[in-house]
Image (cartoon, rainbow, N blue to C red; front, top):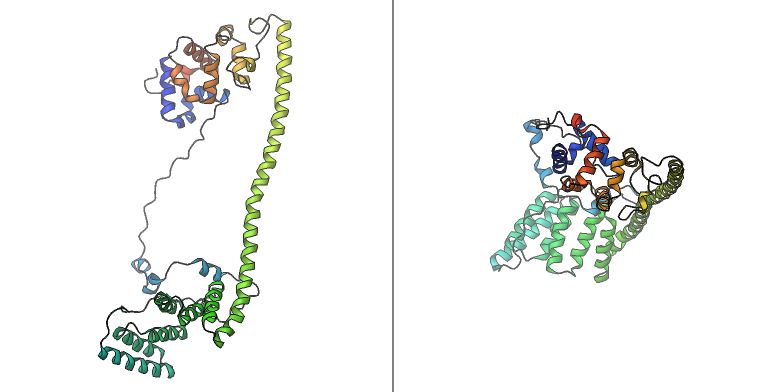
Length: 381
């Protein structure tokens, strides 16, 4: 009894021990009582030491480090959608935000004049196609007078000319932060989304810009953008529909499997009932099952016994042992069997019970030689 109690205590602390051959008899008993035995867990593999990468490979290029995380709009833009005109789309830039002062700061007359002069030089550079020089001059102009929205808008336009839509979007957003109804801010941000192939966003901002201040160039862009945005919306609807259908498919398959399993269970139950009836009749014809008057009882009908009764493997053991059969008729033992079948771990608390412990010990002894199974365990003889 002490050996059994020790084994149950060990398994309670670590259920994975049930997969150790030393505990085979206890595992067989639990499985015979329809208990759920946890699956064996795979042994974790030792972690391999991390390989040192070459210094050059580990270093990040500045451009790569500056790249922002991909947005849902960018992900959608990367998809090839049939019928979408992407002829204006350019590769995405790093999105580096250019220097920008405090627009609320007080500007002296001297700085205001300097900012205006630098702006004029920037426009000349832009006309000559010297876009890099134009950007530097616009940066200096904004440093002298951060509140000049005209200079900020021109820098965004020059960035778009340089095919840097993400950087241009930063300046456009600054215009919108100062005035959400800025038609220039909406126009520049919409154009940036257009060059990135983000048609839904481009349609939103360009449409808002033209509703505030109609501009011919914006109207021309919208002819392409609106068609593309509609095609993207149709594509997304179809994609969502396919995903929903894919989710329903496993559910329908599971329902079919469940119905099939239920049908098989009913057939199995009918067969078991028929076999049990034949066995009972045969036992009644002789001297009774194991000396039990009237043959082996119907366990499902006993108070506290689960609907399925004692599993067949345990019934066979009881049928072959009159003493066990007599113990089973004790009203103290029947509900315990039901409790153990629902939660095998509770077997531990009954091992020292005079009646129930004796019953469990005998059943476990019948399931296999517990002494032999536990001979290799520390402190188990």
